[in-house]
Amino acid sequence: MSFWDALFGDDGTGSHFLSVPDGGGWRQITWLSVVREAEAYAHGLRSRGVGSGDIVGTVLTNSAEAVSGLLGIWLAGAAAASLPVPARGMDLPEYTAQLLALTGDFHDALILTDDPIASVLDAAAGEPGLMHGWSEVRGAGRLADGPPSGAEIAFLQYSSGSTSAPKGCMLSADAIASQVGIIMEMLDATPCDEVAVSWLPLSHDMGLFGVLLPSCAYGGDLFLSSPERFLRSPGSWFDDCMETGARMTAGPDSALRLAARAAGTTRSSAPLRLDHLIVGAEPIHGGTIDAATSAYADAGLTADVFLCAYGMAEATLAVTAIGRDESPTAIAVDGEALAAGVVEIREGHAQDSVSIVSVGQPLKGVSVALADGPPNALAEIQVRSPSLAAGYFHDPDRTARQFVDNSFLTGDLGFLHDEQLYVIGRLDDMISVSGRNVFATEVESAMASLGAIRRGCCTIVDVRQQDGAMLVALAEVAEDSTDLKQLAAEMSQLAVRVAGVRLDECLFLPKGGLPKTPSGKVQRYRSRRLAMQAEGDEAARISLT
Picture 1 (cartoon, one colour):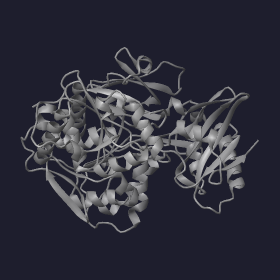
Picture 2 (cartoon, rainbow, N blue to C red):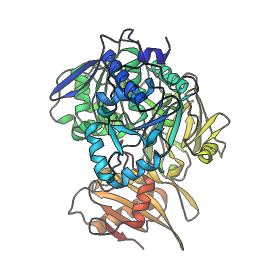
Picture 3 (tube, one colour):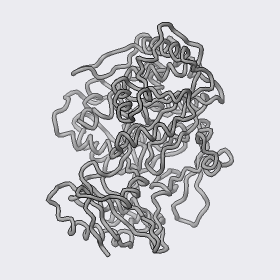
Picture 4 (tube, rainbow, N blue to C red):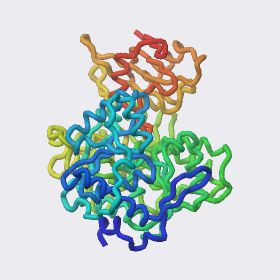
């Protein structure tokens, strides 16, 4: 049975559930009921004139209504556009203006989301009728005409905007079906036999294609929490896995680190039964996996459960992963050389070395290559995949630059060692300083070790001026009493020691002031803008020149 037939069929799904938080427990809904509700949404959308070839915008939350709503858009024959959710530090008028800019060519500029959110965003935009709740488009009848097929565009996956303004990847029906097949192969999953837990936002490719759609199509039980609940209580992730007997879950390195730190608080006493914990979406640190394994060792968490992976929205999701029976592998590289884009592998773990975790080998049907360059240099990763996007929506120039000869030029930097791929960061993270290319994330990682800086809340950016470029560090301080001049001096010393560059300025921000995506990635392009514009009492500038 094809993926799309399985997604909307009732073969095996009637006895399996989507479960969402409800008070202190879970509300269970059979997948068959989810699809029946989707048919009602499809009926309502068709009555509004939505049909084949149309695009319907949606701000996807982790609600049961959003799941049925997405399926309803497809059953109406239209493509769904998953719009970015508000990033941290973005005010609502700015966000609604962004939505309007992205959806001008959609069907009647239609944007759907949960009813309460629609009301709030309408008020923020000062434009009633901009947003529509799912209840507004629910029809009285049922419609199941069929989703897009073949090369027809079924989904626009908008980026969260970590390195640039959000861009929409055009995913065909075939690309989505291929990706779900890749995921099932990667996990060696048996239809109707999986129990999964996820808090990942459905607006993110890992949450949608990596967890939700395989569960929905093939009848597994999915306990769907939310990113808001996770951020309030990071320990809830593993608590949910314990209480539900989950066999699969997924999350980024930063979330795993938060969950490990939260392990000492009140938690379930049940054992973990995980077969796979997929870690991806951002660079993976060996120390994070060690911390999580140590924190939950008494619950039975072992290293061979972690499935380190690499992927991107332009490939629908997954590109590489370690083997199902492998434990994560880390190697040590020279930190100073890496900051300059050169890979020097070391034996042991010297003080100035950096531990990098392998993300494995290409998955079935996928191939990975590195751009030509000098020996031992970091190189751009290039990907071919049956689930590759058809390009960027209404952006032919960017599409032509990055989709070349049936390959995608990822903008990610990495290297190969013993046939394993190691991903370091992005070309966007390379900053040109005094004629040198410096890998910013390694400098940021060193600065994050300073106890006065909130974990994961610092970045460096180059700010262009008429007389050259300034190198500015932005950071959130952990305590109001921090001596900012002393901290700025320590940060400057670290930048010199790690990468041989000098900071011109430090901009210290209050908690929540550093722009981030909903999944926790620092938004470098918005940070650069903030460094150029930030004023007032909440932002403290310390000049180092």
